[in-house]
Image (cartoon, rainbow, N blue to C red):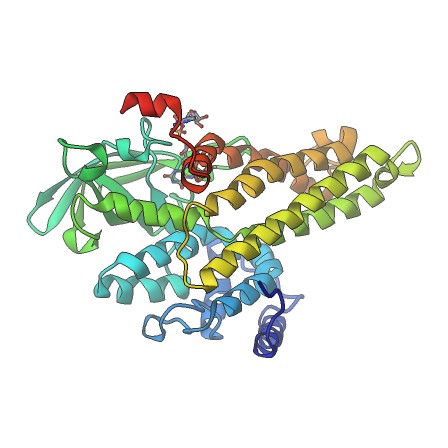
Length: 399
Ligand SMILES: Cc1cc2nc3c(=O)[nH]c(=O)nc-3n(C[C@H](O)[C@H](O)[C@H](O)COP(=O)(O)OP(=O)(O)OC[C@H]3O[C@@H](n4cnc5c(N)ncnc54)[C@H](O)[C@@H]3O)c2cc1C
């Protein structure tokens, strides 16, 4: 493994830096509203030739390299944070890749450019009230009727469902036989008649995810990805992209949080001394940093595999388990410890440190152990499919 960037990559990095500096001036405030800010941000990247680095040019992409994609993601990260550029993660991390790998030519031509230029925001409708970890247990049904499917049922925990234009939807098209052999994968227009979205309030106070109800929703058969009843394999592809979604990105963003946490520990005083002088806190900061570095190196390992032509596999679960499920909740907890009694002051409270952004991160991290596969499920995947251990006893007995 060679960690160095080539001279061409460094030239590309300089180009990106110059573009970002010019296109997102520090004194310009992003437009009001989450969607508007995101669309403006994404449109500017697209117009500048910095969106969809690895997608084909005929779909609006750049046909660039994976390293360029990594460099772009490193350099855009602080801008994306300020402009809400990360809000369409399901679109950029999952929908685009899934359609690119498994969609029809018409689907690619229609959807990929609209993803890249910021026109379409995506959500993922896999989970149902009785089908979460066991995503194949869905009961939302789709019945063929002429050129359409007629869809009835309910999804839950649909992140960004209230903002999304399109949804990656799993539906049941066959009732008999093994449950994973009766699933079809559809692309649903969130504005179609019969789609109702009801936000669910989260512990952070936001309604980031939703219930989505579908009553006699007509979805054209041209919006099916893959064959009827073979949607489970498409679902697995999407989930692999979800779990491999950039350990490097995750490590970089967690490192930015870590840096801010150190700055905070330097400024907050306890018994007249900066909190950073406390040996116990220093120890925990160092330990977190060491683990973050391990996460980053694991990201490089995945990158190396991908550069050699590999597709995301079960190894993607290692970074998700280390970073999102384990380290992030711990790190945000440490931020609360550093704040001491101030940690009770959330956004909007007089005296809240950094207007409660650390509190938000701490509360939001609670969902990390559940979303994109629970901690236990990722451990099962790593145990069985990476380490080759026997299947877990309960599931083996159920077969
Ligand atoms: C913040 C957030 C965002 C989300 N966004 C989306 C989204 O956009 N789209 C979407 O479709 N879903 C989304 N989800 C749903 C998420 O994918 C599910 O919540 C998750 O898969 C778990 O399913 P469940 O809630 O039904 O719990 P269950 O599957 O019922 O699990 C309950 C408990 O049992 C454990 N368990 C279950 N099976 C096993 C097993 N075989 N071995 C060991 N332990 C097991 C689990 O680990 C868990 O602790 C989101 C969830 C959260 C928290």
